[in-house]
Image (cartoon, rainbow, N blue to C red; front, side, top):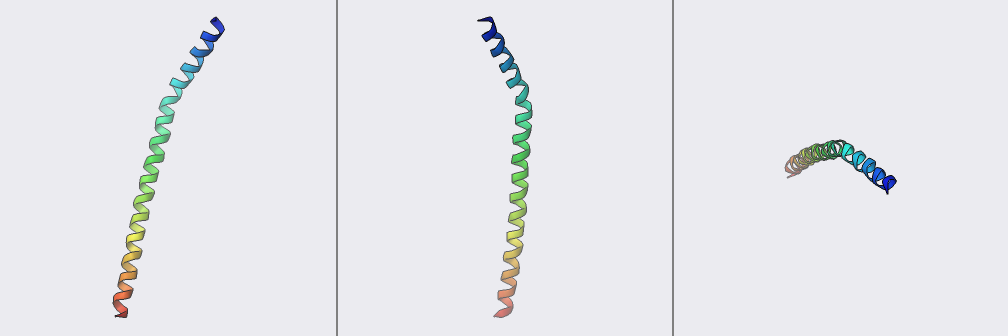
Length: 59
């Protein structure tokens, strides 16, 4: 019983210690994804404008 209690205590402590790292990792990934999406949106908009300008020249 003591061994089990100690094992649970160690596991719990380890998990609690990992929480800040996990939060940081998730936040960083979310931020990176948001920035990537913003850049992709900008690129798509620029490409659309180029295509539109090209089509306007044709007609």
